[in-house]
Image 1: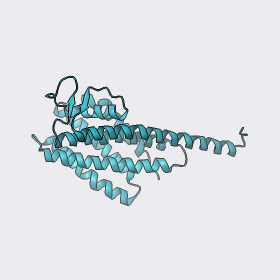
Image 2: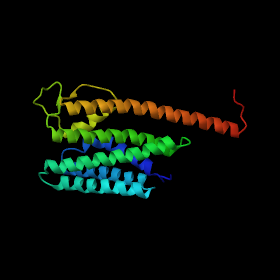
Image 3: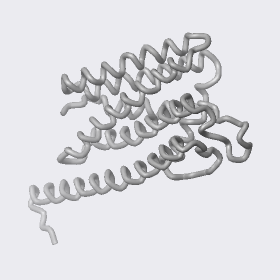
Image 4: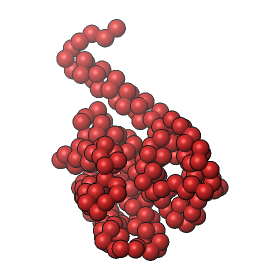
Length: 227
């Protein structure tokens, strides 16, 4: 499966989104820049899965409507909750599908390459982005599902905080400044923490095993004695 730099570009675009996110919320110009970065993730994600016609059709079917709705939501003065929900659900499906395709590539790899490493990093960030969208959908469905622990129940968590909350939960940092209140929010937060821990354990053991096998094969091929 030849990625031709798509995995590298996807990983870089997601890192840029994480680094620049605090500066991309607020005004119209900032939201346009954020949508441009999200669009880059969309296009690079399409590039990653496009090795298969079936995968390409699925990704385009999910990604194109999400791409359109994201820009429509931005230019609409007062977007409806249904528009936000539709965009969020499509984003969840697109992120999940892209992560699954890349995960299959990483797990089936026979050696550790740059693409495998970029793929493993991309999956981790896609999981964070996926749950960011899940939390937005939950908050849209059940307003007040999350709250600031120190400020009381009247202080509803702003949507801009959910990316931070997602990665704090994924890495199991658990600062406790934002807490899930509704049952649905609690279950998805717990699920994300479990997925984060299990993913790191599985992927690190897989990469280490591949690297050891690769080193042994290299050593045998060069005639190096092994103890």
